[in-house]
Amino acid sequence: MTVVRRLAELTREEVGALLPDALLVVPIGSTEQHGPHLATGTDAAIATEVAARAAEAATWPATIVIAPTLAYGASDHHLPFGATLSLGVGTFRRVLDDLLSSAARTGARRVFLLNAHGGNTATCAVAAAEAARADGLLCATAIVSQLLEPRTIDAPLPGHAGRFETSLMLAIAPGSVRAEHARPSPGGEARRPPRGLVVADPNRWQELDGFTDAPETSTTELGEALLDACVRATAAAFEYVAQLDV
Image (cartoon, rainbow, N blue to C red; front, top):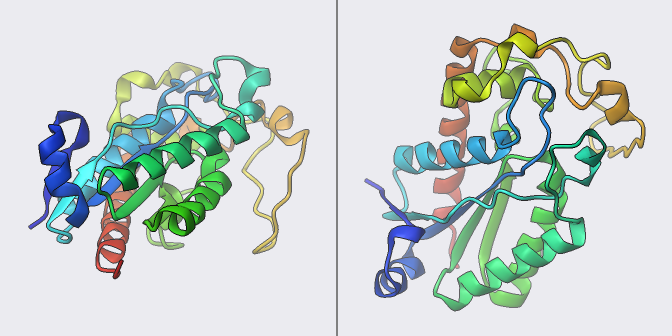
C-alpha cells in the first residue's frame, strides 16, 4: 500500500529520510484564460486533483511525495485573450531546471512532472531529459490527457476548455464552471494533424476564440468518468516509473 505525503507538510528531516526511496510528483498547470465559462486555474486544478487521487490509487512505490503545484506555465499564446499570467518558454524551462536540480540535491532520485497544460509539454520533456543528464535523476513527464488510451472511454478528444476539460471541472470544482456562458467554439474541434506532425498556426487560437469544440455539452457524469480514467492511467504511470532502476 502506497503512503502519500505532501512535501509542504514535511520537515527537512522527514524529507531527507523519505525522498531517496520515494517518487516525487510535481503537478504542473497554468494560470490562463479558459474561454468565457471556465476559471483561469483549470489546468492547475486538474493536475492537483489527478496527482492526489492517482497517488492514493497507486500500489507502488511504498511512498509518493506530492510537491506543491506549479500553477504557472508557458501560456503566451493565450495572452491576447487576457486573464493570463504566463512564463515565457525560456523562463519556464529555467524554473523546471532549478526545481529538478534542487530536488536532486535534497535527495530525490525519481521525479514525475504531471502536467495538465498543452503549452508546457515540450518544455517539460526537455527539462526531464536535462535533469537525467545533469543531475542523475530518473525523471518522467506526461500530460494527463495523453495518458489515456484512445477509446478507453466514450468521450471527446481533449481540447482547450472544451467538453473534456469542462466536464472534468464539473466533477472536480463545479463552482469554477459558468455553465450559463458555455457555447460552441466558432472554430470547432481541436485539429488533429497526421501522427507525429507538429503544426504551429499563428491564427488558430483567434479562430477558436480561445477554446475548442462544444463545452455546452459537458456533464458532471462524463466528468466523473473522465476523472476516474485519468486517475487510473496516471496511477499506472506512477507505478511504472517507480519500478525502474535508478
